Length: 358
Image 1: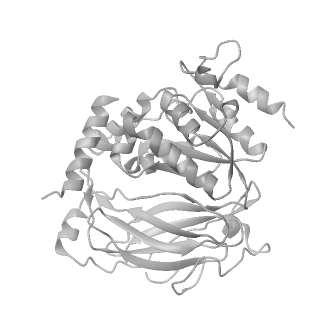
Image 2: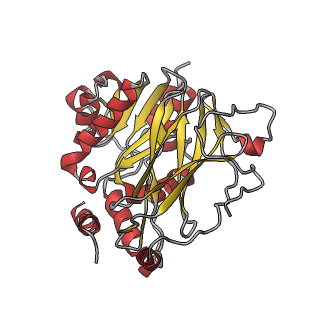
């Protein structure tokens, strides 16, 4: 029988659709549980292990082989795990040396039945090897939380949270920018894509693709990728702050990668209610507030909806650095996408402006 959280999630998805080896791979040896930060990136290490450089940050990632299946603690878990895994893991943005809680959400099937009271193990690649940072049991909401200490060396650290019962996993990143680093925030639906209805389409895809076996790729606004690239060139780490719920994190990551967007933290809502219009502005403002509280500088915020304007203002971001595309462009003292027509639906003019900057 579904618990109340699963029933709420199933209802919320329908509403949204209608409304809008214990051993390591060759990349590293066996490591004990512990804190992140014990090993500094080795500048002489193989490039495949070190990954790419972005905004002065080393991307630490390599091929990952999960530990062997240990079997589930409960018979009921084996039953629900017959469905497809729908796990998710939030990206994190933290200052060097900070304590941070890594949280994953674990569920199975198209109704997203939560995985309860099962062991999950956290792994991180520190540019020399995959290391275990500990284990935790999922709660009644299918969530597992493990607190770690971020490295003192800035970088982009790949994360994996593995369900020990069947070795399925959730993927994410721990971003550790330098203290006081510059960030630029980007909404996705209606801002980088052509319409807020992309969210509804993705919900439908998420629920019915196993049956219909169809595919759908949201259409980007003209010059969307170039917009993000120019902000990166000017020294910002892009932050993709979306109103999509956590169970669309995999689809969202795939879309960003498919569009060849620069790598940046993806942050989705943790609760279905925050994905709805009455909750999304407060959710975004709270996240941006947490970034600013760590000393990061949010320089530039891009959106399309009135809720984006409200969220950015509530987070203390100046209107002079708020850019809105579409019919809300230029409202409440914001910049529209185009000077001649603030409500235009291309980022071409903004890209030209940014390219003219040194």
